[in-house]
Length: 143
Image 1 (cartoon, rainbow, N blue to C red):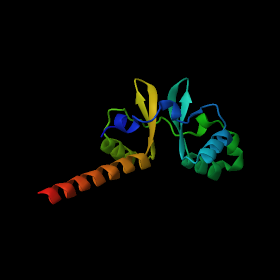
Image 2: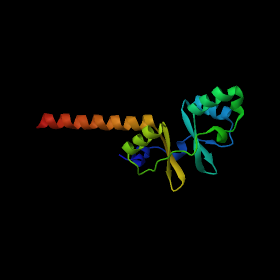
Image 3: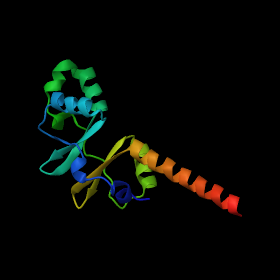
Image 4: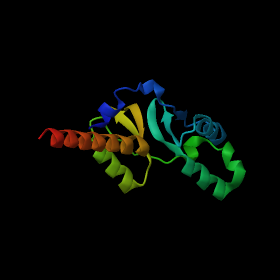
């Protein structure tokens, strides 16, 4: 399965983002309120980076609470590691594992069209394996 099929039932407008000029405190409030682990960071309509829980932890550890006043653009992980809609789920999982990231903006022709987490991809793989197993059981029972 490819990423585009995974995103087929999602509107790209459903992706929650933040801007490079937003403060860390504002972005942390979004993460907490929405109960999510990362936000794509936008600059003039394009993905500039990712702001995640890890970025928060590293900043607070190094600079203390004062770091919450910093701009997201100054602390985000950049450049963002992205994937195209035609990439296979397996390829995206391999990329996430190799680069040690848990979220990928889905970008086509420079524009973000979705956002996937490692949880989304693993769930897709598990569902696919369950369907295959059920098909095999049905085949065996009819053979």
